[in-house]
Image (cartoon, rainbow over all chains, first blue to last red; front, side, top):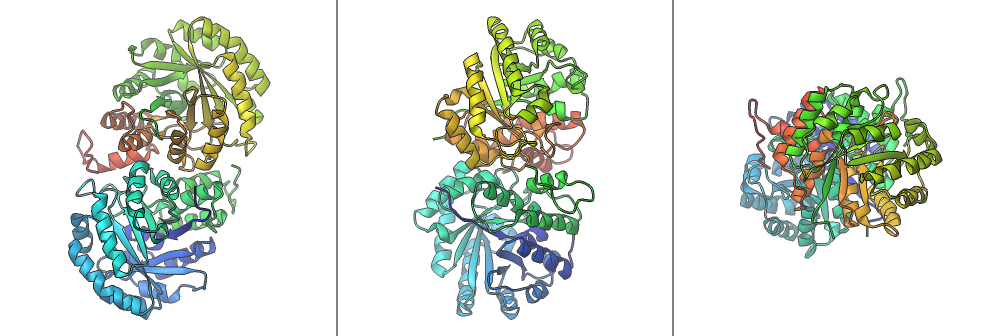
Length: 310
Length: 310
């Protein structure tokens, strides 16, 4: 039984851009976010309150957060790596934050410079403050489908961490196939384990498309009731600490498949392709999304809109 | 319940190459076919007995068929467009042929210059001769998931044609998403209709990956017992009469997903990536297969084999 409605959580302006070599201006990032919102995306991760020395592409997320057009039906989130980041999120009016850790020690160390125990202790400090301010808190738990350093991952170990995150009061757990090596059988096994003790509504999936299996994994997850998926416009992204990883699942690829299946996402596909074309123009190279390239390939020269013959 | 074993039917040397601008020599085509066989593929469509004016890329399929290394465990097929093609197939020792038609009038006319009724009449002439010579006959039925000219297709109409093909004695029906616009829900609906009156073992699926949904469609089909899928090495292909269509599902993408799911295909993935690298070298441009690009991206310069860290 597939869900009637799926929420697409757009990570392009954060996870996408942080892995692009182009450093977009605040104006360009705002243009992209506006195009995504205009296409009907209702959850958008707009940036990260990380120090600009670490990720220059996301410098001045404060200005993005301050200047983004807010609407009651539109939820923005930002990644918060530490207490200073939380203060910046609060100062710029964010109502949702995302915390980040990995299910494997090596990836967590390389990516956050903390052990898993240190990340958990750190979350335990940040969460009460965030909750006190009424923030919605998403926690990313990465590398569950595979780790570029440790290889196969025991889902029971990931579940143990997830249990702790839930007990701390995280409102959403986003389970990550950070390097995009998952398969549908594995997706089912991981989720069946998690769903034994957690409601499907608590979980989101963050899939990369390195091996082209992200949509098949979404299908397997939807069959188990998962209805929130992270995607990146055009398939931008990757992971600097995950060698060989390709970009995120492309927003258009998922939105298009769901529309064709009659599953409601609230997204206008024509406008979404426009947002993808804009993303491609801004980063200055061809993006990997299949649906985007199919649509752009069908465009006649000089044609403003897309002919959707098929 | 997923099948324990899946047969991958390689169409790269035919469907792939006929849509590439490079005209490979017979020697190059034989090298590619040998690499595919060496990787463990056991069904390979080696070419088409079409007139070289029509598809110069497949000229001299006779020489390919004559010179290909034959082994008892390896099945070669070739496309046969007409009686002259059948005679060429018989003269070169082929034991399997493939006939081709579409489920929509316009695509069939543009692609074969025949109406559907004419194609069926034509098959009815060729089949008894083929059967008399003991050939295994596959029939392609294309554009079932969508037609570039007629849009949506009524699966009941496709089933009606399939029924006729079966009654004529075709040994295998290969159902095609020729332009790669299918989704898993539609795949299920189409197959459930066919499976009401046909065994799963009679059916194969020929999926293109224009919208990135081919693997998700394979998953939906496997859940219904389908266990034969067409793929093309590196994702070569497309369709000259299907504007905007991208290539076939890449052999490595499916083989890799199935291996990860514990489904036996008999394929050696490392050798398959080598075959993909060869295909890319022969056609002279980067191929679309995700798994191939991920593997090649992980290669260190000068490294002969692929590091499969993840």
